[in-house]
View 1 (cartoon, rainbow, N blue to C red):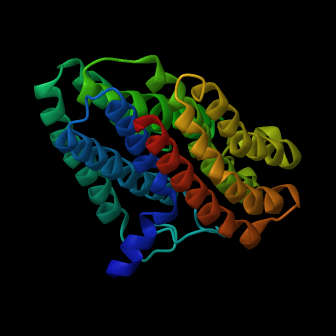
View 2 (cartoon, rainbow, N blue to C red; view 1 turned 90 degrees about the horizontal axis):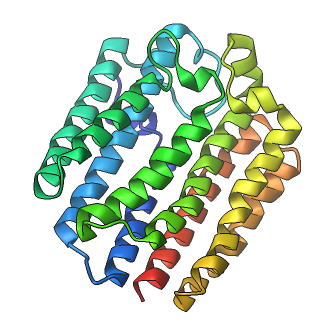
View 3 (tube, rainbow, N blue to C red; view 1 turned 30 degrees about the vertical axis):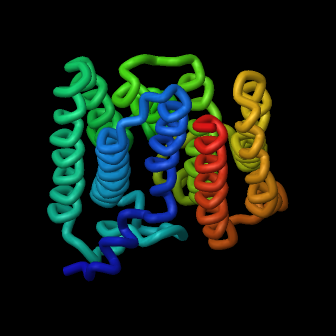
Length: 288
């Protein structure tokens, strides 16, 4: 029986900023448009967070039963390390998906029922990332999914459930948020290239190879600051997001400097802090 601390570790807390930052940024856009509705923002945050935890448990289960997590360097895998039975981890993942679906149903009821379709697609994408017979995460499509769901869908969706419209600022702000979420996944997959290649898991990092994956990480960490300049044209306060730029330097130096294996683990935490700082500052700038 896994302990509470092991369950928390299995939820991969260093990746969770990827779910909350889009909601913060989307709410910043809604505030700037004078359409903020706080209870809807909090409910959107709950949906995003439990979906992210559900994805992590789902990946833990699917990779664990396939045997691809038996020799990993990174955070604790509940199934792969045999500290929790697969059925318990699967139940935890499905429980998270159910909780997200119920909360999403409330948001759909007060806005538009089309949100049910978006939510259903998000849950299916979460499961089939590593689940099913042909998981798309094993076919170099993980970063595409992360960009879409942790960038475009999460930011624009948060704006919509509050403002009930889709302003262009929401779409533009979603791009850098998605890129920073991709940076987390790229760093994780860069670390796992050797074991993923051996187990037949063809992530984008495996396809690109070590050097090009490091360049991809650097691009994902740097390009968001270029989007700040575009957003600053109509929203000058958005420039305060540039204050987060120094936080991109340590993880980028590690990645471009050739760090591998356990040396890449701190990059996840540093990328998460970059995400949080960038997202909060951008949200404040857009709100002002």
